[in-house]
Amino acid sequence: MTRPMKILSGLLLCLAVYCGVDPFNHSATSGFPGFVSHKVDFPHWSEIPTNKDPQNLLQKSEIKFVGQVQGPESIVFDPMGRGPYTGVADGRVVFWNGDSWVDFAYTSSNRSALCDPQPSPLAYLKNEHICGRPLGLRFNKKTGDLYIADAYFGLMKVGPEGGLATSLATEAEGVPFKFTNDLDIDDDGNVYFTDSSVNYQRRNFLQLVFSAEDTGRVLKYDPVTKETTVLVRNIQFPNGITLSKDGSFFIFCEGSIGRLTRYWLKGAKAGTTDIFAILPGFPDNVRTNKDGEFWVALHCRRSSPNYWMSTRPKLRDFMLRLPIKAKYQFMIFIGGWPQGIAVKYSPEGDILQVLEDRPGKVVKAISEVEEKDGKLWIGSVLMPFIAVYDLGSAT
Image (cartoon, rainbow, N blue to C red; front, top):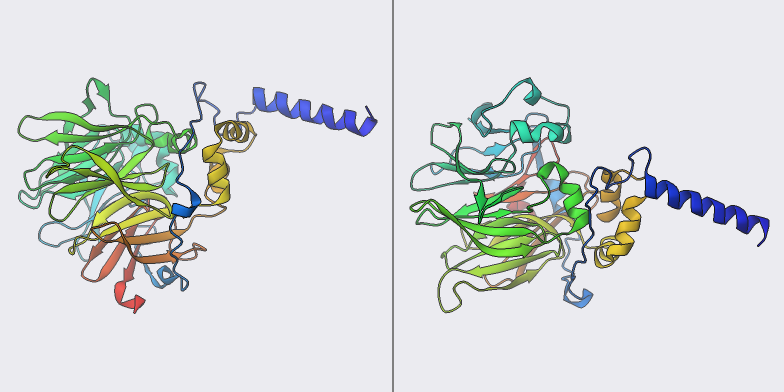
């Protein structure tokens, strides 16, 4: 062996030892000794829609409330049309009264100085399990109660006057919720909601993304019997969920695969699922508009890096053991930078409209798109603002 080859072999051996030992805890899986990468069964590239927004119309969005709302994941309006209301990174649900943001509700009874304002949404991660993290929000239009999917405290409810939310459910089949994510409510008050993992909490969401494990569940809470049942199990990162306008089915997002799945509630197919749509990227939440169409928020498009890493768990394991911090591994996975993508689907699952900010100059890391009065209210679990896009700008 030549001297250069010996040097190269020695360097590769040192790198392998360094990655295996990770003495400075720089790898994305440091602190997770049981971490396992799972294969994602991606659809064939020919099935992935290529619809794009060549004008990057989301760049016309108005950025509002900068620094006033940290990580506004979900956005709702109450039955009287007031709001918006949103859950923020410090564990509160806040309400826009027309002049300012005021506290409306909170999910933790153990709030302290640990929950005081921080410089960015991610700065709250280490104390989220103490302060709470409201994610999905929905109002019961009949009672005015606000239902909350708190990532740590489970399914909760607070009355029209706000205050400390009451716990409704924290486990199903004896298995505690680890990452309660989103919800919707039918006309009878039944709550359909997602638990993204039984292993990873939200503060470890990057490791959940990297693992692609399939312990996620879709559940139903019955307000009469107060029982929680599992409707769908073994899902790779379920998150957003929404009922159809007629209540015959709901659809939920499968984050790792990048698709919408339909669960039938009525008719001959009741209790069964089918694929509603293959998405052009990876979803967070999905919301139904007044016309029965569905707005899906995507945090990035599909790309070669996430395809290769998702379909080859051994390659992913190798990459994740490199001394590269999780947040930088995530940037590699999503193609280099956070994007802004919103896609509207028909009740039959056909793409009706695509809105984008591909460079992420104005809108990025979208978590939810709520349509109201001709405008899209856009939230982001990672950004310190809400964006508002006027649908008239697309014409």
